[in-house]
Length: 64
Length: 402
Ligand code: HEM
Ligand code: SF4
Image 1 (cartoon, chains in turn green, orange):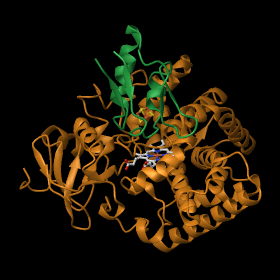
Image 2: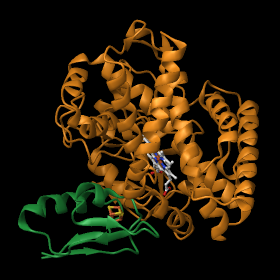
Image 3: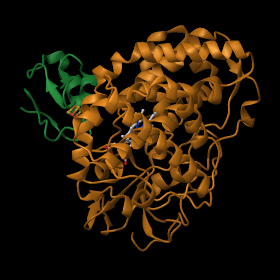
């Protein structure tokens, strides 16, 4: 289940990086989301779902 | 439902039965009508939102506008600052804009507010907090936590972020203290605002001559903003970031001192600090006038039709007490995972400074608890004057001893 992130939609809130720091970071230039590892391990899925839910802009998706 | 009598007329009720809980009427409203009609003090008809899910739905819906000209005063009060976003403030107040204008401003700044950068500021924030503690000790007991700790700490952190040079910080601190101290008449707040704008212009000019590695230099040398916009954006950062953090530091300390059991838990286990900060943010929801969004077309939410132009006031304090989202919501519980609260709003305007606020609160509370193992209120907790008339909730003063 890969993570999809749309930096165009992202508003740089940092919620994803705060929620799942191993999987998300933010660009040094404009603060938009950087996916560090697009395919999370099973035990990380709960954190990813939390990050998707908390993302204020709807920039994140966990696809099947 | 549109035809029901407005339970809330002439703006938001202000009287709180208990200082740290929103007025009880909002809880009753949520049970019956999480989207309820209300009338603003200017007579406009709109809606008050008290349900968590409803609030999230509206805040992430692009059919709702944040335009300043569509917003209304929330409280009936002659004490409102009387400042008009459009007329009295310099351009660049993107909190009150929609895309694409909002996007243009926000994208210029998001790189400066990343979680990583804000974490990198922790050593400076710790130094600032330590200076405040030293000053409190030098002055002796009791201290007013508002004036002696929270307000100067928050002002210094903003100075650090913007890159305000040391020689201007004293003036900056004083002006910002005046700006948020007491209820002011319109002329007085206009005079303070003008003085702040002049100081910002002076500091920004200084960056042209002597660039540094800071946010203001980035904006000045970036060439993306008109000079007036640059001042406007800087002012927004100051206004949005100073009063909020300062009040959160004082009110959060007050809440902990009122709940000895929670305080003892935090003292016993420092690793609870992140959770404690989130829970205090949720429980206290200092933006107690909420945020406003106006539908640009008729929108139906949970069976209620919000007509174009009828502003929805999302009452953040009661949204954060929705039992569907937070079990036993009126209890302060620093061990609950409160993250996901709407204290910083939601959608594209979600607080730009939230990661800075988190670091600042974490350092602020930890420093106070560590340095003052016997921190206590110096007066009866029920005599503390609360800021119920102000845009940002908090305490006017907080006498403490140690
Ligand atoms: C506890 C502290 C804080 C609280 C509770 C808070 C709360 C909020 C809320 C509720 C909004 C959203 C308004 C809306 O949806 O219409 C907001 C926006 C904003 N905040 Fe904060 N804030 C805090 C600290 C800060 C700090 C420290 C800064 C900067 C130094 C800051 C800068 C901003 C800016 C620039 C916006 C506008 C964002 C936009 O419209 O895109 N805030 N804040
Ligand atoms: S949570 Fe969403 S808006 Fe915030 S940085 Fe991550 S992707 Fe961007």
